[in-house]
Length: 503
Ligand code: GLU
View 1 (cartoon, rainbow, N blue to C red):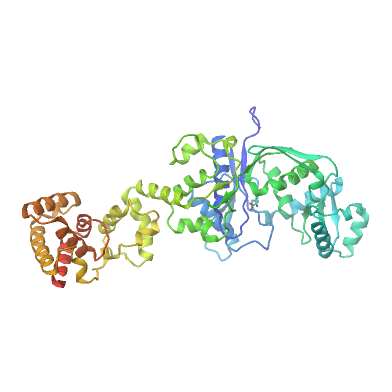
View 2: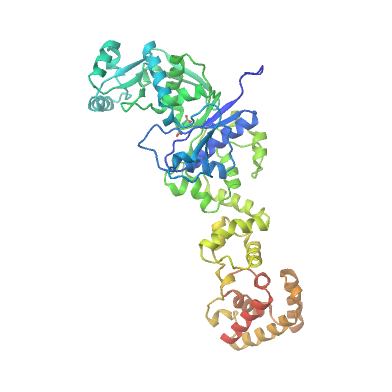
Protein backbone atom coordinates (compact mmCIF):
# COMPACT_ATOMS: atom_id res chain seq x y z
CA UNK A 1 0.00 0.00 0.00
CA UNK A 2 1.32 3.46 -0.87
CA UNK A 3 0.61 6.66 1.04
CA UNK A 4 -2.08 7.31 -1.56
CA UNK A 5 -3.94 4.14 -0.63
CA UNK A 6 -3.88 0.71 -2.21
CA UNK A 7 -2.96 0.43 -5.85
CA UNK A 8 -6.04 0.28 -8.04
CA UNK A 9 -6.69 -3.23 -9.21
CA UNK A 10 -9.52 -4.41 -11.42
CA UNK A 11 -10.40 -7.63 -13.14
CA UNK A 12 -12.34 -9.01 -16.03
CA UNK A 13 -13.83 -12.34 -14.94
CA UNK A 14 -15.56 -14.08 -17.85
CA UNK A 15 -16.89 -17.61 -17.87
CA UNK A 16 -15.50 -19.62 -20.78
CA UNK A 17 -18.85 -20.40 -22.35
CA UNK A 18 -17.64 -20.40 -25.93
CA UNK A 19 -17.05 -16.91 -27.17
CA UNK A 20 -16.47 -13.39 -25.93
CA UNK A 21 -19.75 -11.47 -25.94
CA UNK A 22 -19.72 -7.89 -27.17
CA UNK A 23 -20.92 -6.88 -23.68
CA UNK A 24 -17.95 -8.77 -22.24
CA UNK A 25 -15.65 -6.79 -24.48
CA UNK A 26 -17.12 -3.57 -23.10
CA UNK A 27 -16.65 -4.80 -19.51
CA UNK A 28 -13.06 -5.77 -20.25
CA UNK A 29 -12.44 -2.42 -21.95
CA UNK A 30 -13.87 -0.31 -19.10
CA UNK A 31 -11.78 -2.26 -16.61
CA UNK A 32 -8.73 -1.76 -18.79
CA UNK A 33 -9.38 1.98 -19.21
CA UNK A 34 -9.95 2.42 -15.49
CA UNK A 35 -6.73 0.56 -14.65
CA UNK A 36 -4.65 2.51 -17.17
CA UNK A 37 -6.15 5.83 -16.18
CA UNK A 38 -5.28 5.20 -12.53
CA UNK A 39 -1.93 3.53 -13.15
CA UNK A 40 -3.40 0.42 -11.61
CA UNK A 41 -3.37 -3.14 -12.80
CA UNK A 42 -5.79 -5.30 -14.71
CA UNK A 43 -6.38 -9.01 -14.16
CA UNK A 44 -7.99 -11.61 -16.38
CA UNK A 45 -9.62 -14.33 -14.30
CA UNK A 46 -11.46 -17.30 -15.74
CA UNK A 47 -14.62 -18.23 -13.84
CA UNK A 48 -15.19 -21.82 -14.85
CA UNK A 49 -16.78 -23.40 -11.80
CA UNK A 50 -20.00 -24.19 -13.64
CA UNK A 51 -18.91 -27.25 -15.54
CA UNK A 52 -22.21 -27.45 -17.43
CA UNK A 53 -21.54 -24.16 -19.16
CA UNK A 54 -17.88 -24.74 -19.89
CA UNK A 55 -16.94 -25.02 -23.55
CA UNK A 56 -13.79 -26.62 -24.93
CA UNK A 57 -11.42 -23.93 -26.20
CA UNK A 58 -13.40 -21.19 -24.45
CA UNK A 59 -10.41 -19.91 -22.47
CA UNK A 60 -8.17 -19.73 -25.53
CA UNK A 61 -10.91 -17.87 -27.33
CA UNK A 62 -11.18 -15.22 -24.64
CA UNK A 63 -7.41 -14.79 -24.46
CA UNK A 64 -7.06 -14.54 -28.23
CA UNK A 65 -9.91 -12.08 -28.62
CA UNK A 66 -8.61 -9.78 -25.88
CA UNK A 67 -5.21 -10.01 -27.51
CA UNK A 68 -6.60 -9.07 -30.94
CA UNK A 69 -8.22 -6.02 -29.36
CA UNK A 70 -4.97 -5.14 -27.58
CA UNK A 71 -6.57 -5.22 -24.16
CA UNK A 72 -3.44 -6.41 -22.44
CA UNK A 73 -3.70 -7.48 -18.83
CA UNK A 74 -1.05 -7.50 -16.15
CA UNK A 75 -2.04 -10.77 -14.52
CA UNK A 76 -3.86 -13.81 -15.79
CA UNK A 77 -3.67 -16.84 -18.03
CA UNK A 78 -1.73 -16.49 -21.27
CA UNK A 79 -1.22 -18.82 -24.19
CA UNK A 80 2.08 -20.49 -24.67
CA UNK A 81 2.09 -20.36 -28.45
CA UNK A 82 5.39 -22.15 -28.74
CA UNK A 83 4.14 -25.30 -27.08
CA UNK A 84 2.91 -27.84 -29.56
CA UNK A 85 1.16 -30.15 -27.16
CA UNK A 86 -1.95 -32.20 -27.47
CA UNK A 87 -3.70 -31.03 -24.36
CA UNK A 88 -5.13 -27.53 -24.58
CA UNK A 89 -4.67 -26.97 -20.89
CA UNK A 90 -0.91 -27.26 -21.00
CA UNK A 91 -0.87 -24.52 -23.63
CA UNK A 92 -2.01 -22.10 -20.98
CA UNK A 93 0.56 -20.41 -18.78
CA UNK A 94 0.08 -17.57 -16.34
CA UNK A 95 1.59 -14.24 -15.48
CA UNK A 96 1.23 -12.59 -12.09
CA UNK A 97 1.74 -13.63 -8.48
CA UNK A 98 -1.85 -14.26 -7.48
CA UNK A 99 -2.61 -17.35 -9.52
CA UNK A 100 -3.99 -19.63 -10.44
CA UNK A 101 -6.24 -17.31 -12.43
CA UNK A 102 -8.48 -20.19 -13.44
CA UNK A 103 -11.05 -20.94 -10.76
CA UNK A 104 -11.31 -24.68 -11.37
CA UNK A 105 -7.67 -24.85 -10.27
CA UNK A 106 -8.43 -23.13 -6.96
CA UNK A 107 -10.95 -25.51 -5.41
CA UNK A 108 -9.07 -26.12 -2.12
CA UNK A 109 -8.98 -22.36 -1.51
CA UNK A 110 -12.78 -22.06 -1.70
CA UNK A 111 -13.19 -25.12 0.49
CA UNK A 112 -10.93 -23.54 3.08
CA UNK A 113 -12.99 -20.35 3.26
CA UNK A 114 -16.34 -22.08 3.27
CA UNK A 115 -15.18 -24.18 6.21
CA UNK A 116 -14.14 -21.01 7.96
CA UNK A 117 -17.68 -19.68 7.49
CA UNK A 118 -19.11 -22.88 8.94
CA UNK A 119 -16.81 -22.53 11.93
CA UNK A 120 -17.91 -18.96 12.44
CA UNK A 121 -21.54 -19.96 12.12
CA UNK A 122 -22.21 -17.65 9.16
CA UNK A 123 -22.82 -20.54 6.78
CA UNK A 124 -24.63 -23.85 7.25
CA UNK A 125 -25.06 -27.27 5.73
CA UNK A 126 -28.30 -27.83 3.87
CA UNK A 127 -29.64 -31.30 3.06
CA UNK A 128 -32.91 -30.33 1.40
CA UNK A 129 -33.63 -32.35 -1.72
CA UNK A 130 -34.13 -30.81 -5.15
CA UNK A 131 -37.79 -31.94 -5.04
CA UNK A 132 -38.40 -30.25 -1.73
CA UNK A 133 -36.86 -27.01 -2.98
CA UNK A 134 -38.88 -27.17 -6.19
CA UNK A 135 -42.10 -27.67 -4.24
CA UNK A 136 -41.27 -24.74 -2.01
CA UNK A 137 -40.55 -22.53 -5.00
CA UNK A 138 -43.84 -23.44 -6.70
CA UNK A 139 -45.76 -22.66 -3.56
CA UNK A 140 -44.08 -19.26 -3.21
CA UNK A 141 -44.74 -18.49 -6.86
CA UNK A 142 -48.40 -19.42 -6.48
CA UNK A 143 -48.63 -17.06 -3.52
CA UNK A 144 -46.75 -14.37 -5.45
CA UNK A 145 -44.02 -14.33 -2.82
CA UNK A 146 -40.31 -13.82 -3.59
CA UNK A 147 -38.80 -17.23 -4.24
CA UNK A 148 -36.14 -18.11 -1.73
CA UNK A 149 -34.97 -20.91 0.45
CA UNK A 150 -37.01 -21.20 3.65
CA UNK A 151 -33.99 -21.78 5.89
CA UNK A 152 -35.15 -25.23 7.10
CA UNK A 153 -31.62 -26.55 7.69
CA UNK A 154 -30.42 -23.56 9.67
CA UNK A 155 -31.43 -25.27 12.88
CA UNK A 156 -29.28 -28.38 12.25
CA UNK A 157 -26.44 -28.57 14.70
CA UNK A 158 -22.93 -28.90 13.34
CA UNK A 159 -22.56 -32.35 14.95
CA UNK A 160 -25.80 -33.52 13.40
CA UNK A 161 -24.78 -32.28 10.01
CA UNK A 162 -21.39 -33.95 10.21
CA UNK A 163 -23.05 -37.25 11.08
CA UNK A 164 -25.36 -37.01 8.07
CA UNK A 165 -22.43 -36.21 5.81
CA UNK A 166 -20.56 -39.25 7.15
CA UNK A 167 -23.59 -41.32 6.27
CA UNK A 168 -23.20 -40.19 2.68
CA UNK A 169 -26.06 -37.69 2.55
CA UNK A 170 -25.74 -35.06 -0.16
CA UNK A 171 -25.49 -31.47 0.96
CA UNK A 172 -24.78 -27.93 -0.09
CA UNK A 173 -23.45 -25.08 2.04
CA UNK A 174 -25.52 -21.92 2.28
CA UNK A 175 -24.81 -18.42 3.49
CA UNK A 176 -26.79 -17.30 6.53
CA UNK A 177 -28.64 -14.09 5.74
CA UNK A 178 -29.69 -11.82 8.63
CA UNK A 179 -33.47 -11.94 9.02
CA UNK A 180 -33.91 -8.24 9.64
CA UNK A 181 -32.38 -5.04 8.44
CA UNK A 182 -31.10 -4.12 5.01
CA UNK A 183 -27.93 -4.46 3.02
CA UNK A 184 -26.69 -1.24 1.50
CA UNK A 185 -23.90 -0.11 -0.71
CA UNK A 186 -22.90 2.78 -2.89
CA UNK A 187 -22.57 1.83 -6.53
CA UNK A 188 -20.19 4.06 -8.49
CA UNK A 189 -22.72 4.22 -11.33
CA UNK A 190 -26.14 3.62 -9.77
CA UNK A 191 -25.58 5.38 -6.47
CA UNK A 192 -27.02 4.12 -3.20
CA UNK A 193 -28.56 0.65 -3.40
CA UNK A 194 -30.44 -0.76 -0.47
CA UNK A 195 -32.23 -4.06 -0.23
CA UNK A 196 -34.14 -5.55 2.67
CA UNK A 197 -32.45 -8.70 3.91
CA UNK A 198 -35.75 -10.57 3.94
CA UNK A 199 -35.60 -10.49 0.14
CA UNK A 200 -32.12 -11.99 -0.09
CA UNK A 201 -31.93 -15.71 -0.69
CA UNK A 202 -29.78 -17.96 1.48
CA UNK A 203 -27.24 -18.27 -1.25
CA UNK A 204 -25.64 -21.63 -1.97
CA UNK A 205 -21.88 -21.21 -1.61
CA UNK A 206 -20.69 -24.75 -2.13
CA UNK A 207 -22.59 -27.07 -4.45
CA UNK A 208 -23.19 -30.76 -3.85
CA UNK A 209 -20.44 -31.61 -6.36
CA UNK A 210 -17.94 -29.80 -4.13
CA UNK A 211 -17.61 -26.90 -6.55
CA UNK A 212 -18.12 -23.36 -5.30
CA UNK A 213 -20.88 -21.26 -6.78
CA UNK A 214 -20.00 -18.16 -8.74
CA UNK A 215 -20.75 -16.03 -5.67
CA UNK A 216 -18.30 -17.71 -3.32
CA UNK A 217 -15.47 -18.06 -5.82
CA UNK A 218 -15.93 -14.52 -7.07
CA UNK A 219 -15.76 -12.92 -3.64
CA UNK A 220 -12.89 -15.07 -2.39
CA UNK A 221 -10.84 -14.36 -5.50
CA UNK A 222 -11.57 -10.65 -5.61
CA UNK A 223 -10.33 -10.43 -2.05
CA UNK A 224 -7.28 -12.66 -2.42
CA UNK A 225 -6.27 -11.04 -5.69
CA UNK A 226 -6.46 -7.57 -4.17
CA UNK A 227 -9.24 -6.25 -6.40
CA UNK A 228 -10.16 -2.71 -5.37
CA UNK A 229 -12.93 -2.03 -7.92
CA UNK A 230 -15.44 -4.51 -9.26
CA UNK A 231 -16.61 -3.24 -12.65
CA UNK A 232 -19.14 -5.56 -14.29
CA UNK A 233 -22.43 -5.78 -16.15
CA UNK A 234 -25.69 -4.65 -14.61
CA UNK A 235 -27.01 -8.20 -14.62
CA UNK A 236 -24.82 -8.80 -11.55
CA UNK A 237 -26.28 -5.94 -9.56
CA UNK A 238 -28.88 -8.17 -7.81
CA UNK A 239 -26.06 -10.49 -6.68
CA UNK A 240 -24.05 -7.72 -5.08
CA UNK A 241 -25.94 -7.61 -1.73
CA UNK A 242 -25.17 -11.31 -1.30
CA UNK A 243 -21.53 -10.59 -2.05
CA UNK A 244 -21.50 -7.82 0.50
CA UNK A 245 -22.91 -10.10 3.18
CA UNK A 246 -20.28 -12.64 2.24
CA UNK A 247 -17.47 -10.10 2.55
CA UNK A 248 -18.84 -9.17 5.94
CA UNK A 249 -19.14 -12.80 7.01
CA UNK A 250 -15.52 -13.33 6.08
CA UNK A 251 -14.48 -10.14 7.82
CA UNK A 252 -13.03 -8.61 4.67
CA UNK A 253 -13.16 -4.98 3.49
CA UNK A 254 -15.47 -4.24 0.58
CA UNK A 255 -14.17 -3.30 -2.84
CA UNK A 256 -15.98 -0.53 -4.71
CA UNK A 257 -18.65 -1.63 -7.15
CA UNK A 258 -19.57 -0.18 -10.54
CA UNK A 259 -22.26 -1.81 -12.63
CA UNK A 260 -22.47 -1.12 -16.35
CA UNK A 261 -25.78 -0.48 -18.12
CA UNK A 262 -27.42 -3.27 -20.08
CA UNK A 263 -26.89 -3.54 -23.82
CA UNK A 264 -30.10 -3.36 -25.82
CA UNK A 265 -31.35 -4.12 -29.32
CA UNK A 266 -32.59 -1.09 -31.28
CA UNK A 267 -36.16 -1.97 -30.17
CA UNK A 268 -34.90 -1.64 -26.56
CA UNK A 269 -35.24 -5.36 -25.87
CA UNK A 270 -32.35 -7.10 -24.12
CA UNK A 271 -29.50 -7.76 -26.54
CA UNK A 272 -29.96 -10.91 -28.57
CA UNK A 273 -28.03 -13.96 -27.54
CA UNK A 274 -27.52 -15.31 -31.04
CA UNK A 275 -23.80 -15.83 -31.45
CA UNK A 276 -23.60 -14.18 -34.88
CA UNK A 277 -24.91 -10.93 -33.45
CA UNK A 278 -22.87 -10.71 -30.30
CA UNK A 279 -19.66 -12.74 -30.55
CA UNK A 280 -16.63 -10.49 -30.82
CA UNK A 281 -14.70 -13.14 -32.75
CA UNK A 282 -17.46 -13.25 -35.37
CA UNK A 283 -17.26 -9.49 -35.82
CA UNK A 284 -13.49 -9.78 -36.24
CA UNK A 285 -13.95 -12.60 -38.74
CA UNK A 286 -16.35 -10.51 -40.79
CA UNK A 287 -13.68 -7.85 -41.03
CA UNK A 288 -14.53 -5.36 -38.35
CA UNK A 289 -11.26 -3.85 -37.25
CA UNK A 290 -10.40 -4.31 -33.57
CA UNK A 291 -9.79 -0.56 -33.20
CA UNK A 292 -13.25 0.16 -34.59
CA UNK A 293 -14.90 -2.39 -32.32
CA UNK A 294 -13.13 -0.91 -29.32
CA UNK A 295 -14.21 2.59 -30.33
CA UNK A 296 -17.76 1.37 -30.79
CA UNK A 297 -18.14 -0.54 -27.53
CA UNK A 298 -16.42 2.22 -25.54
CA UNK A 299 -19.31 4.49 -26.42
CA UNK A 300 -21.98 2.00 -25.34
CA UNK A 301 -23.09 3.60 -22.12
CA UNK A 302 -20.42 6.23 -21.74
CA UNK A 303 -19.31 9.24 -23.69
CA UNK A 304 -16.56 11.75 -23.26
CA UNK A 305 -18.38 15.08 -23.60
CA UNK A 306 -18.61 16.65 -27.06
CA UNK A 307 -19.55 15.26 -30.48
CA UNK A 308 -16.31 13.56 -31.37
CA UNK A 309 -17.00 9.94 -32.34
CA UNK A 310 -13.63 8.56 -33.30
CA UNK A 311 -11.12 8.16 -30.48
CA UNK A 312 -7.82 6.44 -29.99
CA UNK A 313 -7.39 4.12 -27.04
CA UNK A 314 -5.04 6.71 -25.51
CA UNK A 315 -7.77 9.36 -25.68
CA UNK A 316 -10.24 6.97 -24.09
CA UNK A 317 -7.80 6.38 -21.25
CA UNK A 318 -7.39 10.11 -20.77
CA UNK A 319 -11.13 10.81 -20.66
CA UNK A 320 -12.46 7.71 -18.91
CA UNK A 321 -14.44 8.29 -15.76
CA UNK A 322 -16.62 5.77 -13.93
CA UNK A 323 -18.87 8.52 -12.64
CA UNK A 324 -19.96 9.56 -16.12
CA UNK A 325 -21.24 6.13 -17.13
CA UNK A 326 -24.95 6.20 -17.99
CA UNK A 327 -27.50 4.37 -15.92
CA UNK A 328 -29.89 3.62 -18.75
CA UNK A 329 -29.40 0.78 -21.23
CA UNK A 330 -27.19 1.34 -24.26
CA UNK A 331 -28.58 0.52 -27.70
CA UNK A 332 -26.31 -1.44 -29.98
CA UNK A 333 -26.70 0.28 -33.31
CA UNK A 334 -25.18 -1.85 -36.07
CA UNK A 335 -25.34 0.96 -38.64
CA UNK A 336 -23.20 3.09 -36.41
CA UNK A 337 -20.68 0.28 -36.10
CA UNK A 338 -20.61 -0.10 -39.89
CA UNK A 339 -20.08 3.61 -40.34
CA UNK A 340 -17.32 3.62 -37.74
CA UNK A 341 -15.59 0.63 -39.25
CA UNK A 342 -15.77 2.33 -42.65
CA UNK A 343 -14.05 5.38 -41.16
CA UNK A 344 -11.25 3.23 -39.74
CA UNK A 345 -10.88 1.47 -43.08
CA UNK A 346 -10.64 4.83 -44.87
CA UNK A 347 -7.89 5.94 -42.52
CA UNK A 348 -5.72 2.84 -43.06
CA UNK A 349 -2.58 3.16 -45.19
CA UNK A 350 -3.09 1.19 -48.43
CA UNK A 351 -0.31 -1.29 -47.80
CA UNK A 352 -1.68 -2.20 -44.40
CA UNK A 353 -5.25 -2.40 -45.65
CA UNK A 354 -4.14 -4.63 -48.50
CA UNK A 355 -2.50 -7.02 -46.07
CA UNK A 356 -5.71 -7.12 -44.05
CA UNK A 357 -7.87 -7.73 -47.13
CA UNK A 358 -5.77 -10.39 -48.85
CA UNK A 359 -6.92 -13.27 -46.59
CA UNK A 360 -10.55 -12.45 -47.47
CA UNK A 361 -9.75 -12.33 -51.19
CA UNK A 362 -7.89 -15.63 -50.88
CA UNK A 363 -10.77 -17.26 -49.02
CA UNK A 364 -13.14 -16.14 -51.73
CA UNK A 365 -10.87 -17.77 -54.30
CA UNK A 366 -10.21 -14.44 -56.01
CA UNK A 367 -6.47 -14.20 -55.49
CA UNK A 368 -3.61 -16.62 -55.02
CA UNK A 369 0.03 -16.21 -54.11
CA UNK A 370 0.72 -15.50 -57.76
CA UNK A 371 -1.71 -12.60 -58.13
CA UNK A 372 -0.02 -9.30 -58.91
CA UNK A 373 0.34 -7.44 -55.61
CA UNK A 374 0.16 -4.08 -57.40
CA UNK A 375 -3.22 -4.97 -58.89
CA UNK A 376 -4.56 -5.89 -55.46
CA UNK A 377 -3.30 -2.63 -53.98
CA UNK A 378 -4.96 -0.65 -56.74
CA UNK A 379 -8.27 -2.43 -56.18
CA UNK A 380 -8.04 -1.76 -52.47
CA UNK A 381 -7.39 1.90 -53.18
CA UNK A 382 -10.47 2.08 -55.40
CA UNK A 383 -12.70 0.23 -52.93
CA UNK A 384 -11.35 1.76 -49.73
CA UNK A 385 -14.01 4.43 -49.54
CA UNK A 386 -16.85 1.99 -50.26
CA UNK A 387 -16.30 -1.00 -48.01
CA UNK A 388 -17.64 -1.04 -44.49
CA UNK A 389 -16.01 -4.34 -43.52
CA UNK A 390 -12.95 -6.15 -44.83
CA UNK A 391 -15.19 -9.00 -45.95
CA UNK A 392 -16.96 -6.63 -48.34
CA UNK A 393 -13.79 -6.33 -50.39
CA UNK A 394 -14.75 -9.63 -52.00
CA UNK A 395 -18.01 -8.26 -53.38
CA UNK A 396 -18.12 -7.06 -56.97
CA UNK A 397 -14.39 -7.25 -57.69
CA UNK A 398 -14.17 -10.58 -59.50
CA UNK A 399 -13.88 -8.91 -62.92
CA UNK A 400 -10.57 -7.33 -61.91
CA UNK A 401 -9.01 -10.77 -61.72
CA UNK A 402 -10.89 -12.55 -64.46
CA UNK A 403 -12.04 -11.37 -67.90
CA UNK A 404 -15.72 -10.50 -67.52
CA UNK A 405 -18.49 -12.43 -69.17
CA UNK A 406 -21.40 -10.28 -70.33
CA UNK A 407 -23.85 -9.77 -73.22
CA UNK A 408 -23.01 -7.31 -76.01
CA UNK A 409 -26.14 -5.25 -75.26
CA UNK A 410 -24.64 -4.13 -71.95
CA UNK A 411 -22.10 -2.09 -73.92
CA UNK A 412 -24.73 0.13 -75.52
CA UNK A 413 -25.52 3.44 -73.87
CA UNK A 414 -29.11 4.71 -73.87
CA UNK A 415 -30.02 6.00 -77.35
CA UNK A 416 -26.90 4.65 -79.00
CA UNK A 417 -26.85 1.39 -80.95
CA UNK A 418 -24.54 -1.51 -81.70
CA UNK A 419 -23.01 0.03 -84.79
CA UNK A 420 -22.34 3.40 -83.28
CA UNK A 421 -20.95 1.87 -80.09
CA UNK A 422 -18.58 -0.25 -82.15
CA UNK A 423 -17.35 2.80 -84.07
CA UNK A 424 -16.85 4.84 -80.93
CA UNK A 425 -15.04 2.05 -79.08
CA UNK A 426 -12.77 1.54 -82.08
CA UNK A 427 -11.75 5.19 -82.21
CA UNK A 428 -11.42 5.29 -78.43
CA UNK A 429 -9.14 2.27 -78.59
CA UNK A 430 -6.95 4.00 -81.16
CA UNK A 431 -6.74 7.06 -78.99
CA UNK A 432 -5.91 5.08 -75.85
CA UNK A 433 -3.21 3.21 -77.72
CA UNK A 434 -1.42 6.48 -78.39
CA UNK A 435 -1.24 7.36 -74.70
CA UNK A 436 2.06 6.58 -73.00
CA UNK A 437 1.91 4.15 -70.06
CA UNK A 438 2.59 7.02 -67.68
CA UNK A 439 -0.71 8.61 -68.68
CA UNK A 440 -2.58 5.47 -67.69
CA UNK A 441 -3.12 6.81 -64.27
CA UNK A 442 -6.63 7.60 -63.10
CA UNK A 443 -6.65 11.40 -63.09
CA UNK A 444 -4.35 11.94 -66.04
CA UNK A 445 -6.31 9.42 -68.05
CA UNK A 446 -9.56 11.15 -67.26
CA UNK A 447 -8.21 14.55 -68.24
CA UNK A 448 -6.73 13.32 -71.53
CA UNK A 449 -9.82 11.33 -72.45
CA UNK A 450 -12.23 14.17 -71.69
CA UNK A 451 -10.10 16.53 -73.78
CA UNK A 452 -10.10 14.04 -76.63
CA UNK A 453 -13.88 13.50 -76.45
CA UNK A 454 -14.45 17.23 -76.68
CA UNK A 455 -12.13 17.55 -79.64
CA UNK A 456 -13.81 14.67 -81.45
CA UNK A 457 -17.22 15.95 -80.45
CA UNK A 458 -18.28 12.62 -78.97
CA UNK A 459 -20.98 12.47 -76.31
CA UNK A 460 -19.42 11.43 -72.97
CA UNK A 461 -21.99 8.72 -72.17
CA UNK A 462 -21.71 7.18 -75.63
CA UNK A 463 -17.99 6.61 -75.09
CA UNK A 464 -17.50 6.20 -71.37
CA UNK A 465 -20.38 3.80 -70.74
CA UNK A 466 -19.10 1.23 -73.27
CA UNK A 467 -15.54 1.80 -72.07
CA UNK A 468 -16.56 1.11 -68.47
CA UNK A 469 -18.69 -1.91 -69.27
CA UNK A 470 -16.00 -3.29 -71.57
CA UNK A 471 -13.57 -3.15 -68.68
CA UNK A 472 -15.87 -4.48 -65.98
CA UNK A 473 -18.73 -6.34 -67.65
CA UNK A 474 -20.91 -4.82 -64.90
CA UNK A 475 -23.88 -2.49 -64.88
CA UNK A 476 -22.40 -0.65 -61.95
CA UNK A 477 -18.71 -0.37 -61.12
CA UNK A 478 -16.04 2.21 -60.37
CA UNK A 479 -15.27 4.76 -63.12
CA UNK A 480 -13.68 3.65 -66.41
CA UNK A 481 -10.55 5.59 -65.53
CA UNK A 482 -10.11 3.87 -62.19
CA UNK A 483 -10.68 0.54 -63.87
CA UNK A 484 -8.22 1.19 -66.69
CA UNK A 485 -5.61 2.35 -64.19
CA UNK A 486 -6.07 -0.72 -62.00
CA UNK A 487 -6.04 -3.19 -64.90
CA UNK A 488 -3.05 -1.52 -66.57
CA UNK A 489 -2.75 -0.43 -70.18
CA UNK A 490 -2.29 -3.85 -71.80
CA UNK A 491 -5.22 -5.55 -70.06
CA UNK A 492 -7.50 -2.54 -70.45
CA UNK A 493 -6.89 -2.31 -74.19
CA UNK A 494 -7.34 -6.05 -74.57
CA UNK A 495 -10.74 -5.87 -72.86
CA UNK A 496 -11.83 -3.04 -75.17
CA UNK A 497 -10.73 -5.15 -78.17
CA UNK A 498 -12.77 -8.07 -76.81
CA UNK A 499 -15.77 -5.77 -76.52
CA UNK A 500 -15.41 -4.59 -80.11
CA UNK A 501 -15.33 -8.22 -81.22
CA UNK A 502 -18.53 -8.88 -79.29
CA UNK A 503 -20.39 -6.08 -81.06
N1 GLU B 1 -18.21 -14.81 -14.28
C1 GLU B 1 -19.09 -13.68 -14.36
C2 GLU B 1 -19.45 -13.50 -15.82
O1 GLU B 1 -19.36 -14.41 -16.53
C3 GLU B 1 -18.39 -12.49 -13.78
C4 GLU B 1 -19.24 -11.50 -13.12
C5 GLU B 1 -18.36 -10.55 -12.33
O2 GLU B 1 -17.59 -9.82 -12.96
O3 GLU B 1 -18.42 -10.56 -11.13
O4 GLU B 1 -19.82 -12.45 -16.27
